[in-house]
Amino acid sequence: MEKIIDEKKQGQTLVLDKKEGNSRKLFIESYGCAMNFSDSEIVASILSNEGFDTTQHLEDADLVLVNTCSIRDKAEQTVRKRLEKYNAVKKINPKMKIGVLGCMAERLKTKFLEEEKMVDMVVGPDAYKDLPNLIAEIDDGRNAVNVILSKEETYGDISPVRLNSNGVTAFVSITRGCDNMCTFCVVPFTRGRERSRDPHSILEEVNDLWFKGYKEITLLGQNVDSYLWYGGGLKKDFDKATEIQKATATNFAGLLDLCAKAQPKMRIRFSTSNPQDMTMDVVETMAQHKNICNYIHLPVQSGSNRILKAMNRQHTREEYFDMIAKIKRILPDCTISHDLIAGFPTETEADHQETLSLMEHVKYSFGYMFAYSERPGTMAERKLEDDVPEAVKKRRLQEIVDLQQVHSRIRTEEFLNKTVEVLIEKESKKSDQHWSGRNEHNSVVVFPKEHYKIGDFVNVRTTDCTTATLIGEAIGYSENN
Image (cartoon, rainbow, N blue to C red; front, side, top):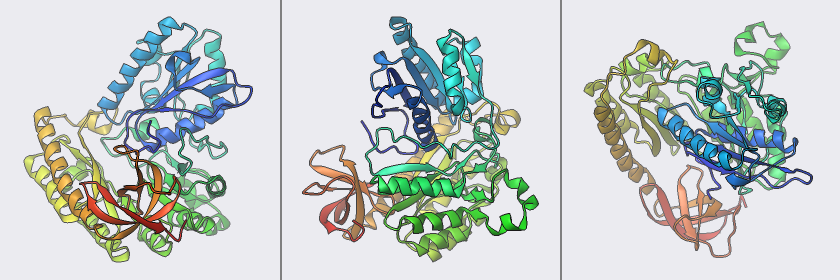
């Protein structure tokens, strides 16, 4: 079973160590973004205090929860298939209860309960603290639902358990929700308004992870660059804050600086950034601290200004190029990755070529590429006809993927015959004689195990590569070990 969860990876059964006295079994499975996996750790922590241990065996479960994603139709269809499987097992074990968490729960609300009758419980992303009450409801034979979005909830007071952890890397949630209202995106509707977590609770979690032996964290949010703490509340209330609050406000650059200083030997990553909100003080902070990884995920979505405007992306192609140039001036070897959507409504062949030319200009190290999937309730669904034929979407997507493969090879080869510092995270998928880890640029590096172990920082001399993986030989522990 995978222990390192990629932010786009689909499907992971999560397991928590047993707690003495717990007698009920929880099977929890997560889909979608890293935030969902982080939320599942919060859910497992809450339910551990309610008598539940997690299990990998569906048939043994008293409670089955699936943490869902609504970002694309394919993700929702995958969840529906899993619910069908759960219900088939439930026929054998009628005491089993089934619940849906996350974005699908928020988007579909009572449809799962009333129309499709596939689940016993529906819980939105801001309602996990209500799980003990909701479980009591379903234990009494009643359906239960809470999908109320919150303007304050950050779960900053919940200590997440680390499910299926390798004991090396961990997510630390810093914001929830999004205010940007991109026309293709359901997140503002399923996760609500932006709100930031108290930096003191973030630092407490970071310090606790270090003392428990973790070596790397990822600061997590739908839009980390909008992080702003001045004592609580919505960002729009900032102008009403007192002078003291303004003076002590912490933005994302400030939070990065605090985390880097708190644990100078702990690697720090962050995801996800938005070009319209990212500021150069973040990049300057990265340059000041060796332990902040030299990597930025900077979704662009399209290379066409016309399509960017239709998407309500608050930046142009030229502004994006300018940002990339500024990043490279401050951090010349910074790795950049992207998100791109092929076949957005009204996209022409000329728009598509603009996307390909943008890719040629930047030459991303890697990216996440998707064909447009109309999401109910979004502005694009309400105002724009999904008029690009599926065959055209698939062809354009394949052209984007093929070009990214070329660029990934170019960027990976830049590290050949160099020494890179690697944090060992797991055994290689292809060989039980090799370790796998990442360097600070987020490149996967594979090398012979020798006497090293998971959690070690190792200097590796690279000798070969594939499109996305560096291959080399360890030459000793790094100074960070």
